[in-house]
Amino acid sequence: MKKIIVANILVISLALGGCAGMSDTEQRTLSGAAIGAAAGTAIGAVSGNAGWGAAIGTAAGAAGGYIYDRHQKSQEEAYNKGYRDGQKKSQ
Image (cartoon, rainbow, N blue to C red; front, side):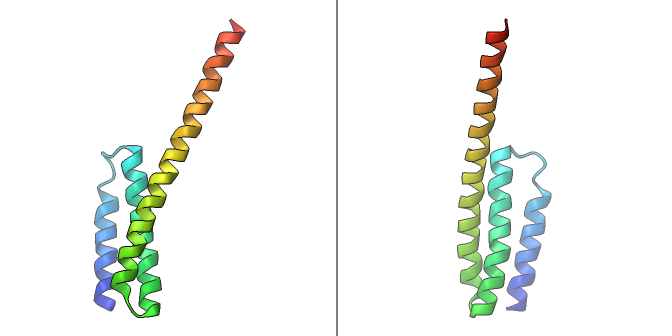
């Protein structure tokens, strides 16, 4: 169990260190996966199966990160559309 936790921490650290050249979508999805893996490992360790907890947490975190990214992009687009419409009306 301790080895799994240490391995997950190492994988998360390496994954987050490589985020510099990624798009916003990739960063948010990977961050969600990393947070989900950490939470899943902790919950899985308490319940007796850290490996399954990490796998389920990773999948749920990646999905959550992707959904969050889609939400942020739709908000940005709505803001930009409103801004453009406001610029057209003021001319």
